[in-house]
Image (cartoon, rainbow, N blue to C red; front, top):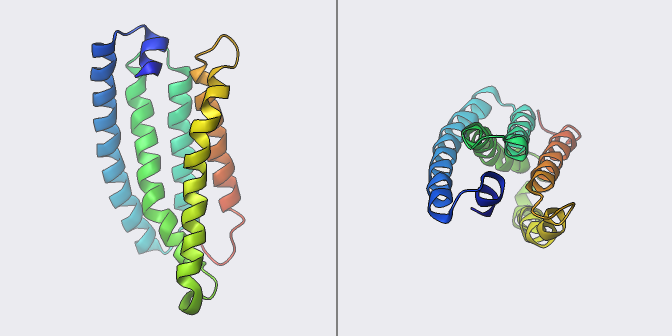
Length: 166
C-alpha cells in the first residue's frame, strides 16, 4: 500500500483497492502455476529446471514492480511473481525431499534444517528493508525490489549446483 501511495501518489482507499486486485491476481496465478508446475515436474521427473525457471519468473515480477511507470504495469508484475512463487512452492519441496541424505533415518532432522533455511530470509527481510528503502531520497522501493530480484536469481543459480536431482 505504501509503495502504491509513494510511487503513484494514490490516496489510501485507491491504494487499498489496487492492492486487493493485485493480491487476488497473484493468488489466482499462484494456484494455477503451482498446480501446473507440480504436475509437470512429477510427470517429467525433473525438479531443478522448474525451480530455476520459477525463481527467474519471481525475480522478473519483482523487476516489473521496481521499474513500473504506471499502475497497470503492476498487473504483469503480480502475474509473473505469482507464477514464479506458485511453481516454486510446488516443486522446491519435492526437490528437497529428492536429495535428502539418510532419508530413512534422518528425514525429520533434515526437513527441520530446511524449514529454518526457509524461515530465515523471511525473518531477515523486514529488518533489512528499511535500510534499502532509505537509500537515496528515502522510499526507494526500486532498490528493495531489485535486491529481491537479485536474491531470487542467486537462488536460481545456486540450484544448478545441487547434486542428486534432475
